[in-house]
Image (cartoon, rainbow, N blue to C red; front, side, top):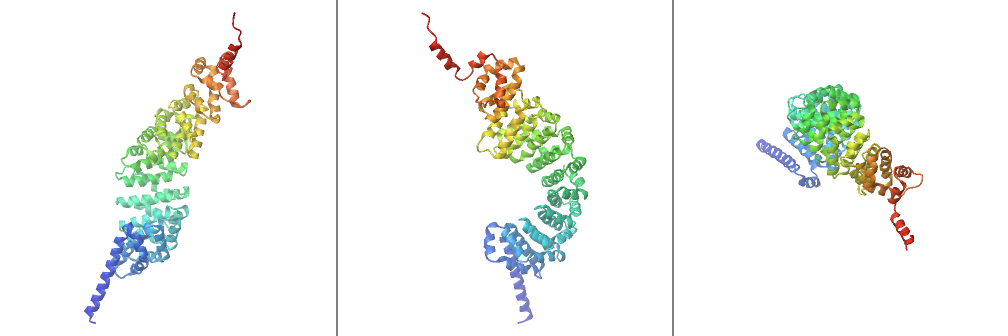
Length: 508
């Protein structure tokens, strides 16, 4: 065989390998082909091609493996069992930027599925190699490495700590300062995934100077970047007062409030979440948000949103109101009760209704004035309905009951309480009647209205245990009226009158 023929054979072999990996990579990009490729044993055929002498074949083989591993955890597990990861990690340090991107993609695709698979990626020494990639000149390599590190860190605190210990955080903070938008996004997302697990991990990110750089990007026109920035700031703020104060000191208010009207739904939700995480810690932080116009902005946000996007706004109003009478009044003045009442009626999901019930309870529990503001918005019957509905979740029932109790114990606005006399079960009725027994002795107009509206008649119909709190309350109410009036409205009184009429001797 001549030299030329030998070269032709090699050329054909290279063409065949190239065509094979390109076809597999193309097929692996469509979910309907994955099972067929797996059954054909494609993993074992791709593995040797990762060490091919032709760089493009190596890269395409890695890309194909990444697409397969990305599809489900079984295929990711097959990559681990096929001993492919050590090969990729070794090559990360040696190969060109195209291969590095593809190899980092495989590591990310494996790590994303579960903590166990992410741990397999860590165990094969990938962290050090990925951190080195964050120092590469090529932004695409940095992005791929940051993405893989974020996917490892998101599962739990131990994996996030491993990413921190490998020295990733300072380099990720440098990445958010790079000009490339996509790199900024991925780096901010990775920092968010590290921060979320514990105050210590969040502190590590803060100590690397992340807050100032994240805060500079809150008005960036790119929606995807803002999503990640607000997510990272939320994850930092949620852990402690000190961390929340550091975020506030970066002078994010009032600028962040404009983003509650952003055209991107996820930006709006993440901003509301950030404000909630700051407001929950102390009355001082909540007051700072009120002073910046934050409560009014969040009330508008709750009115303009639906579903889970509404939830952080609802909870923020509850947290602010919980701190003090003045802060609860700030929520009332900003029409917060009205929007919470609308959300309680409109939202079909139990967990959102439960959040509304809790927030309304936090507003109404302070003073009679607060309770009245909640009661006149006609939420008490709705809360009662949520509590009594058999298909309501346990959480919704508990929160509705507690909110009712909190509001009723302060409410002296009798017209709002009267509908509950007819529908409330004994454990709620006790609180309703208790409020009537407090108000009626001191208000002659209310006593008259209580008779004409049918309230006194309803109270006489309530069956009580002698000596119970409910019985005591009813006695107190009855003592406000002449005995014959109470008798007149008592059950069976008309029958007794008729009997007396029959017994009464007719005049001759």
